[in-house]
Length: 435
Ligand code: DLL
Image (cartoon, rainbow, N blue to C red; front, top):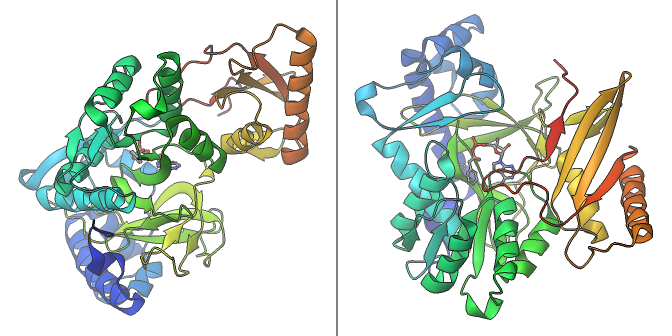
């Protein structure tokens, strides 16, 4: 069985990788400067010409791109090729404003498929697998991204899409799916459904899963591994850069290798925009150095992570990014305390109380923020002894206070009462009407 999909690039020595990146950055900058008016204007303002970019390290001379730029140039303003060369469009809805539209040429699609295939091989996939794709198909990149990766690998590709969870379980069992691809919250939902349908783990052949598209935690990883009897791996991507496969976990499960021969990463301080060294958490910035249709230059993802160039025992030399901490924009500030939903999730899972289904409800009462955390009880916990429930709520509330310094009202709710998501989970309901 292959250990790498593309050994040459996945294990490339650093100096060769830098040479490749430099070459491709120069080509991309020339292309973008000639074809994308906004970037040309920004570079002219900074007095940077394409010929000033000779090495990948020169990237710091270039202007940043933000989501606002994508909205302002909607729909095709940042495309760097003719529409006749585009073979696919994807779009991301986002929570506010216009959606953003991303185009791919045939070559862009081939590269994306290879990135997804690298991820599948990294989690033990081969042409002998049945890859069950339960990410949504459509404008969202999850479904089609892994679909093309699995087909490129020569695996049996099952385009299950999301939804109809009983049927998903039946397919997993009857068709013998071996690799599951979906959001981590949906993986847990599938786990619940397996249990409810009385399907035993010995009746299914799943061995691993590629879970991403939303923040999750190490505790959630253990929970999925236990419930589905598999190894659970993280996969990252974003519509603007490429769908799933921008980076992926390897067998070490200790950070995701970035396909940096296509997507060059930097970490910056989100306030000062200064580059940060390995190990420091900050905002992830990507430059797509091989894209034809939609090459973004120093795109600020708003995702928070850190990079590591340390040697990985899987043999890959591709730089690793740590599990995502959240986004600069899903960080809630509640009574001055910065809170990421993933921190609440960690607390809940570390207590081992309640199923990892929760929702945070933020209100503003008399100018004061309040946080209520609704936690769904597991069936075992479900009990009508009010005293016991009170004690559990208090215990969770204390743990949130001691970890985050934030007092929260905790309310246990009955099993299966928090709306399940078939895609990205909605963890926060913010009723504060903040601008
Ligand atoms: O979520 C692409 C994708 C599909 C990735 C399937 C992985 C698997 P968007 O809808 O554009 O694209 O959302 C991108 O989702 O900026 C992150 O904030 C978040 N995200 C994606 N993967 C992860 C992950 C797809 N593994 C946004 N962990 C990104 C945490 C993730 N957050």
